[in-house]
Image 1 (cartoon, protein in one colour):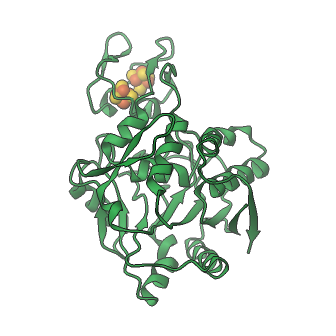
Image 2 (image 1 turned 120 degrees about the vertical axis):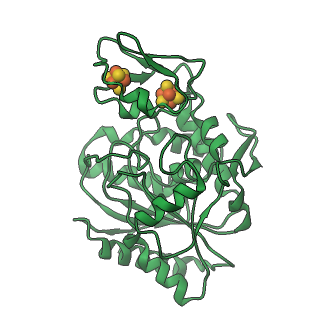
Length: 339
Ligand code: SF4
Ligand code: SF4
């Protein structure tokens, strides 16, 4: 049974979200005797250029001040993305971090200039024998893993597991997880707008009468599925198990680490913060959650979101939790402690 600490904060009150994260983390530290050792980077997502719903750095200020006051050196840590965008190289990634206000700490891009720096972490699980995790993560024993609970076209809804799986993986690791995605265009729906062609980094889509995908070139990043305004592109799921692969990468990312997980259940958008566009939330804000168990904290978020919204939709993503349990990673049995 894992403890999941929770404080309700609504109305996008970022100062209150920062205070809540600190209060919950201090309570967890008191209850568990958690001790910080050495430098403790904060894993965040800086938000793609144009995205307006990522968790802003003001939500992290309480935790950052705590680390400073307790002489615990820290940094923001992130990895480069798979697709072409403002966060494709370490240099442009640092620029977007600055532009989005992440100036309180130094920034570490864990997988090198272009995602070339990684360690193979052996796990010997069902889909992966080893996982490509950004090299700089090996330099630290602990992280504070800040997650934004939200959706994704292929992964469904989630927070900590997706942050560990995609957020800690080097580009090759991200590609390995996406490899099962096989997008197909439903011609009757396609309005030939060309947005998917602009989005595709590997020029796998061309416009004939309607958009057509070359599956020999496609790397399964799911970018086209996300940008299509009319939902004309879907995965045919001949390559399956994306959600299960997420669990295995998440497992690799936290292996041997002693992390604290802080998840913000606010701005619940249907797509992730890698989308460089404005999106509307599909649920009311609920608040902040803190736990030592990334599986339990995701389970708690899905459960509360489903319960309070009455929407079955938010169960999309639970497959990652189910597979995590199958491989002996974490628990979905938790005690929700509301402060
Ligand atoms: S076709 Fe779609 S899924 Fe394939 S690489 Fe291009 S954007 Fe990504
Ligand atoms: S984004 Fe969608 S509608 Fe536009 S061309 Fe591509 S498949 Fe067709």
